[in-house]
Amino acid sequence: MGHKVQFANGPYGGYQAIRIKDGIYWGASESRKDGQASGY
Image (tube, rainbow, N blue to C red; front, top):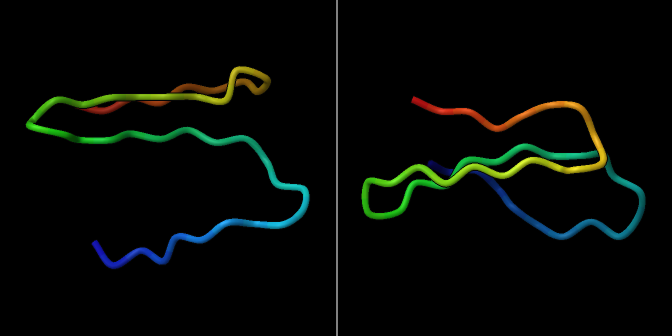
């Protein structure tokens, strides 16, 4: 989709992410933070 992705050298926050592979949604969330990854 044109997003620029790179590694960060330093402090950074938590994350939630959704990956779509072969039509299947895979979700992940930083376990140390409140939140969730959700898709439909």
